[in-house]
Image (cartoon, rainbow, N blue to C red):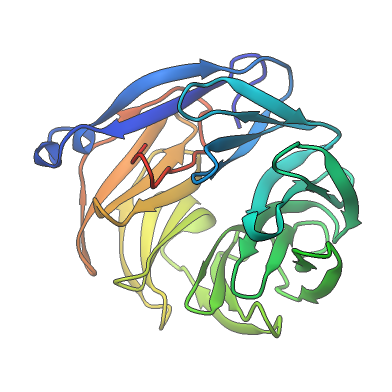
Length: 304
């Protein structure tokens, strides 16, 4: 979370593949976008196709153009907002409003509220599964996950994960969720809403950021205690390796073209690793961002 009144979006861009091992893998700080207003920040969500960047901002969501930094508009009345999920095919967007135990469904074109949906207590992470056409919220107060039909906005069920989910990835017909309080990765079926596996992380605690390589079937888990990237086999739950990262990690991303794994850390660094193979990883050096900059979004269109 970035401190109030000091909001700066850190945009990173790769320079050239030949620069892979020259500190930060050829990435550098390119520009900063000032965003007005008070209140802390949480998840950053990019709609790459629509060229919109959604910024959770205390009691509202600011929407900016990721290419220019221009403020497009604001989604108001989202108390304690954590994240945003977009279901483009239905022209619906969703915000997780942690302080009111609701999800706002909005129109991504006009940014106007359509309706509010009651979910479990303390909704935090939120994400969309295009396979089942459902939006899911990780509820910290009730230690479960709410499932919402993305077209109708109706709650269709609950996943009893018995823990506080943080980041999630949707892949191979399953949803993988970091459980911040139980130090494991839980997988569930987004259609039947049944838990399939509970994979203990073991080598580190407090998992937050989560990313995935569909080709190698590897999960990349960012843990705060002690600060590590943990690489896990998504099929078996076996921990492959772990490497140190910056302190205060909150989010992770993976670039399948460059084979790079990113972790944004609140001490003010972006930790970057090169996936040499499914089981071999190399720390290519951090990029300095700024203290408290611990969330991010990776844009597959531009590589930023």
